[in-house]
Length: 108
Length: 265
Image (cartoon, rainbow over all chains, first blue to last red; front, side, top):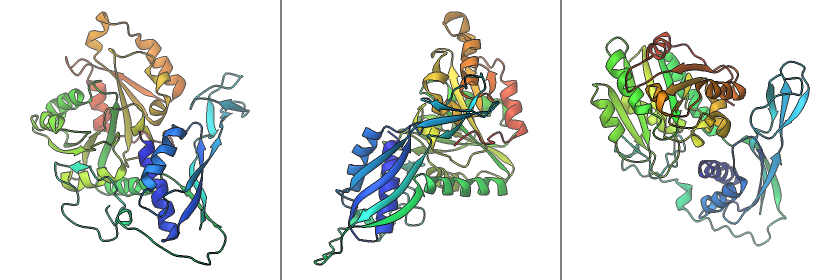
């Protein structure tokens, strides 16, 4: 349930920037290798937003697929887990899929 | 909420005292209702944030890291599932190494000070952090824990995280080494089942090796899995119960070698 901490961080970041104005929509990027359950994050977001200017805002989650670059041959390969190997046998270094960013928000 | 560092953990207790005592923060925005009336409000406008969600924790972690470096404190974050033997490892470490190496301990648990009492019984300096419903320590809790603990210059600080192989992996505490403990009574496939944790750590302790004759735990398989997830893993086998093979762990702590080069995201 670290999603609660993540949701709190999102709400805090938005409420701080919104400076009293109501937030309608929040767009975030979540990598598929970032160890975040998006359903759980939505649930926590709605709870954390209560009583703040973010209450009722829609959380739009852009999921980023995992991708690794081979440490031997440099080829990129899709990763469903936060580790993996290239077809050539080399270890894949994660180059995408660990994102955890607030992109932007819409204010009323 | 702590106005200086954004601490939001309402039920977090450090050393059985709320870190902020009875200080009331006048600007806790969660307590306010903002009723703004915009009768002729313009259409919705988009504000760009482009902000790392864990930025605040990372910043506080860097602050901790700087504080540790300035005082030459080697901070080690110990993580595992509940019952893998973190506290037992710390107890034996304090008893056998405490006289030659100054070590202090931060204990993280959801509730009770039972572990802190076990550590205190060894004569070590310890502060308990209770995270309440929280499933992990974060950099802010550690900062306040360290404030109370005041580890001496040129010493080792062992931070026992909440027993959990998932959540603590995401939260940098400002430590110099991240250690995951697996015991042989667990499955040897733990590294594959909890890859985030095994990727975030740099050192693997396989504990309870005295029980190997009685359980179906394949050490080689476990180590191979760990290296699949994290090729740079340093692995040590030991038993906190019998004291077997504790020397390499003691050597690691005494050397105070920072091992976190790019291990965690």
